[in-house]
Length: 158
Image (cartoon, rainbow, N blue to C red; front, side, top):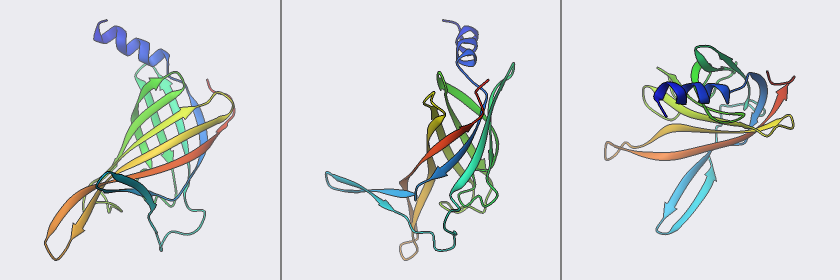
């Protein structure tokens, strides 16, 4: 399949819809040998109930976009970003910001993946780029952050 035909096929699988989303607490993936666990990350400066945002997913002849509206924006993902349809009713996008950032020292980036279940609900997973800093050793190490959430579609998809 040519690249043009693949792009057309992906665009036809896209959709336009608006979602109100609520995220669970961010979790860090920890590995100790063969054991892996997800542990909640505490955000003392973020108010209870602040983990809510709206995303408008739009489709036109130029492609798919996700516009994340989040006034509090504790993890810097608000803004309009190009999206990639990953399946019928599903979109992934990369949200980025020059900061200040929660999980990095300068630029921020998160992968946002949303899947519409077709019943008025959707699941969203946000995976920010994250660095752990050891100030004594003056080193940095990447770590994995996973933020899962549920969304409610506003109106019908177009």
